[in-house]
Image (tube, rainbow, N blue to C red; front, side, top):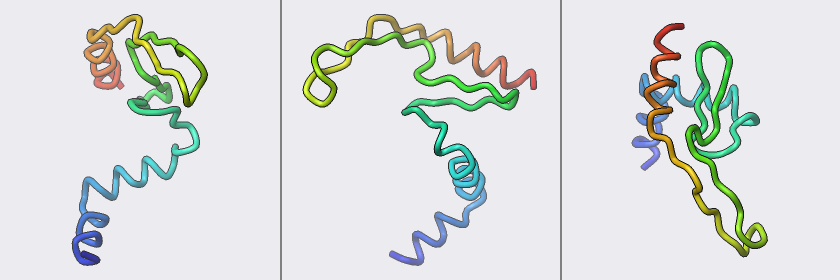
Length: 80
């Protein structure tokens, strides 16, 4: 198990992903949270939601979901 963890933690993609995570973990508001090359970020892009009831006892309701926002984020990231 330790060898598996070592292999995963030192893989090319894993190292870059962990470096990014460690650099910005205090800024992450939840998942998904995108950080773009231009320095901007977006938490729950395209989703508008509200809390019903008390936090921890209630639930979130998605009022709006715009899947086009992901294509826009990709286009923005590619332009950088």
